[in-house]
Length: 255
Length: 327
Image 1: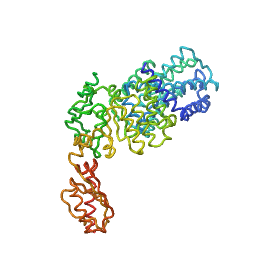
Image 2 (image 1 turned 135 degrees about the vertical axis):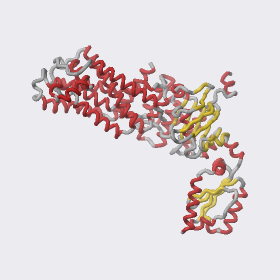
Image 3 (image 1 turned 90 degrees about the horizontal axis):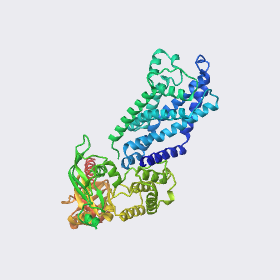
Image 4 (image 1 turned 90 degrees about the vertical axis):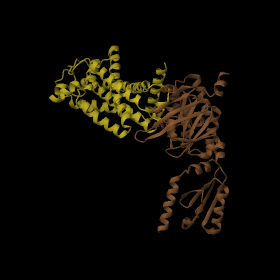
């Protein structure tokens, strides 16, 4: 009960901050629109040999990219709290470090889930064919985006706590996100990639997320190109990265 | 009845037992430190920069971990993080507020982080807001407020969970006299055990139940202001000289002189020892003295005299004198 109350107040803080600075949220919706309209329509002809429509292929990929990029921003609030010394207060409240970290990630997750649902709605509005969301597929979507958020937000928080500066954090976001996106099957089908990239894309966590989202939201059965069970891969990665960040957070003492 | 008994025999005190601590690669700050803070007392911690004042607070908070020894409250060790968070309220030097949030939101956030809900929270919130006079800025985003108002917010956040021990690290910097008095009166009225780090000796003398004076991690003085002053009273004089004649100041035995630009602060245990040489000086070099102030004994003069505070200033003064002679 206490933890739930704490999660709610952390969520409230995050949403209130977004309300005061809505630009971040607006940009997070504009980017996918650009990807879908400019990139999507540009490459539609190029990938016409695809089993289904390219926009149907791209939409879940753009959702996956949004999850990646928004999760990468998770550590930013930690950095701001460190800079204003508000972070010091986390050390002197009656909450465990586990509660502090999981509540922060859950708060970010509510934003990310909202973004994914809005992007699907945008996709529907601009005429992306074959979108279908059932009760069970929505539940699966909620779970899989949570697993990926847990995985990547934990990494972002770890880097924020370790570097403590927004410059290094920004470098991390740009340096890591771009290769992850372009070595995955989020935007381009695996068979259209060069051999060496095809191999990387098979194991890329973003490919796993993209393909699961495709299964859940699009009726066209696209050919799977990832290695291993995507659920197991994402669950394992999220467990490892969350545990690492939690142990690190527990070990540091701020005042 | 039981509470009264515990208080009388000191069971509810905050105790530091044989504490040793040092930062990595910087040697030991505390070695075998034993202190006892009586429940409900307002203790001011004084000392020069680097004397270990803030480190002492961080040890009690658990932000620093002692390499040996224990800290107890109610005769039980303060080990667990949650236990410390419940019992201790911390007001940091650096405010620690979120500039984007309002006082109302921050109080809500911190209170819920302390598992404080419902009517208890509302009651506590109204009490703090009215006592610190914060009702006018409740919904303002804190970045729009003055430094003094932000400091008041920081204090209210540290007290919202009604802690038994309050640790304040230079909380009065940038606050006007009236606001300081209001905060101190409020803190005193709570009857909590309060440890306050400050550089303001006068503030400490006027408000402390006890004063702890640290020098290089060692508690040199621990008692009421009156006890500290009476043990070995000192007198102080501030003399402003014309720059050219700085080096003509006669040597005075048994006094300490601190040079700072054109001002010399002279302290000594006996008023006569202090005034006689100055009188002679006035007769000899009447024209060279711009201003003379002689203070009656107080905590500031006592501590300055006894522990040669601002020693670096004196060294700097000697260097200046040498430079002038060379010219």
